[in-house]
Structure formats: C-alpha cells, structure tokens
Amino acid sequence: MNTALKSAMGVLHLLFITLSVTAISAHNITQILSPFPEYSQFNTYLTQTKLSDEINSRDTITVLVLNNAAISVLATEQSPLSVVKKVLSLHVLLDYFDAKKLHQISAGTALSTTLYQTTGDAQGKLGFVNITDLKGGKVGFGSAADPPGAALNSTYVKEVKTMPYHISVLEISEPIFAPGILAAPSASNVNISALLVKAGCKKFVSLIEDTGVLKMYETASSTGLTVFAPSDGAFKAQNAPDLSKLNNAEMVSLLQYHALSRYAPKGTLKTTKGPISTMATNGVGKYDLTVTTAGDEVTLGTGYASSRIASTVIDSPPVVIYTVDSLLLPPELSGSAPSTAPVASPLQSPSPVVSAKAPSPVIATSPSSVFSPPAPPMESPEGSPVGAPDQPEDSKSAGDVKAPALSEAILSVSVAVIFSVFLS
Image (tube, rainbow, N blue to C red; front, side):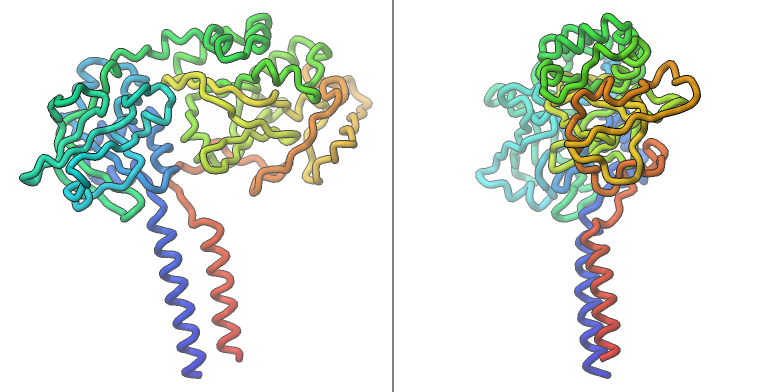
C-alpha cells in the first residue's frame, strides 16, 4: 500500500504542476488592472477599443500602462477612439519584459514589435518601440521611428503585475507617440463603398448600394459596425450561389448576414464563445455565425460552409471591415435550417421543405433556388456542431478563460491512474 500511495502522490504532484502552468498562461488584462484605480482610464480605453481581447488572446506580451494623469492628454485633445486604439496598441509589446530584463538589454538598446505593427497601418519602424537602458536605474521608451538621437521622454516607473513568461504589466511615465499617429482619420470619415472597391469587392458594393443595405451599414457605423465583404472572386467561384433567384427581401437578408451591428476587431472574434448575431438576425430566422480560430487565422461558419477572413480593410473604432474568401450562405435562405445530423455530402443536395401552408414571403421555398450547385459542406467547428442549441451572444467575457482541453484530459487520465494504482 505504501508503494501504491507513493505512486499516487507522484501522479498528483505531476498533475498539480501541469495544471498550475496551464493556469498561469491564462490572463485577463482588465481583471489585472481593476484593483488599481490609478489605471482606470487606461483600463476603460482597453475595453472600449477591444484591445483587451487582443491582449487576452496572446500568450507572451508586455503592457506598458499609464496612470490617469499621464493618459489624460488623449482625453484633453478629444482624440477619436480610432486614434486612442493606435496609440495604446503601441504600448503593447509582443515580448515579455520585466524589471530584470529591462536592465539586462543587450548593448543597452532593443527594438520591440508592438500590436500597432500587426495592424498593417504602421510603415517602416512606426510599429516598433525603442527600449534603452539609460543607466542609473532608468530605462527609456520611445518610438523607433523617431529621428536618431531623439530624447526618450517616457521612462520605466515600476512593475504592476508579472506572470513569467506570459504577461508583464509595467507602468511608464509618459505616452509613446509614433510620428503622425495623432493625425489618423476617425471612423466618421470612413467611406465604406470606396474602401471596398479599393479592396477588390466591387460586386458586393453594387449589391449593397442597389438594395439600400449600404444606408443600413452607414447608420450602424456611428455606434458599431463589422462587415465581412466577399471579394469579387467569391462571386465567380464554381460553387457560388445563383443570386438572381433571390427576391429583394432575401437579398437584403443575405447582405445583412454579412455584417454585425457592433465593433468586432479580430482579437474580439478570436475570443468569441458561441454563435454571434448578425444584422439579419430576427424573430423569423437565427441568421447567426460561429467563429473558429487557428493561430491568427479566423474562420466564420454558417452551418453549410466556412469562409476565412482574408484581410482587414480598415479597423477604425467603431468600424471594422474585412474581406472574406467566399459568400456567407445562411441556412435560413435555403428553405430549411440544418439539423443535428451530419451535413450532407457534396454529392447530395439538401431536400426541399414541403408544406401544406403558403410559403413564408422571406425564406426561399427551395434550397436549389439559391444553392445551385450547393456549396461543398465543411466540417462543423469543434464544440459548435451544426444545429447546436442557441447560446447568448457574448455569453462569456473574454476574461472567463477555462483550462484548455489538454488539462482536462490530463486530469481524467491521472484520476484513472490513481484508481488503478490503489486497486492493484
């Protein structure tokens, strides 16, 4: 029994270490900052710009926070939220730095990549931060795009929170500004049609203009808008639906299905749990989407097929516009929503729904009228099977981070091992 007990204790020790490491890797920046009222404005901006979701979705990161007095310059200048997001994204380093590492920088100076660099808007060195050990216990921070010899006005103040080597939160004295960053255009100046035409979505633009959906997009843009625009190539694909067989109401629903009435940048999509409502969501049909991620790649699922987000046209809070590889085809326009049974194979066409009553004026009566030929079905995202029960949108915050499935598997196996040891 002593041998069995020792073996069991060894398994438990290994399990504890594994789960501890897993737990450490999960972080929530808003929860980390919430006990510190001096960073309340910085924390609020992270939430409003959705940068908090991007920070929470990454494993190795350093956040350079500013106290309320230091960040007040952005509020004083009444900077639009799009500018605030770019400035704060320059304060999120894609590397781990704590106090010890800051004072051990090789050659005294290092350039660190920031979230701003990942947006595609930062040209040259605009998305990099210069970190220099100034000796005497001081470390300076500045834009790597500043002229050589420019003063580093911001300095390291203290550590706020560290989780080696996952997230480090450090306070600095002044904001870091890249040249020209404060002159960025605001969302109110966004020309949706012009941006989409330039991005290669001319067919989509003609559809939203002809149906009046563009006006709906423009109205929503003042409070929150996310658009998933199919490229011109998506309409020419071999499996593209025959849109000429849609009536006007159905066409409007299809185009509304390609947008959300809220601001959802990529970081927010990556942390989304459960189905998300679209502009087409109503009492008649669900018209929702599911989201799956693989690294930095985001894929949208409709129940029939999936479409990858190909590029970001603009991310200017509260508006974000993406291009997608293919049309998003809602099951509600096919005449019958998908069941919990496996999706039909590519050689099979969905069976039309036969009803003794008059057909709904909005939903198409025959699947083949739109899906001709039907789009090849894709596997349903793991954890979101076709026909899964509805879940409230954003039912869980980005901070409700659960232990990965690997930890659950380890726990199950470990318990089984313990029981087998005792029974042997």
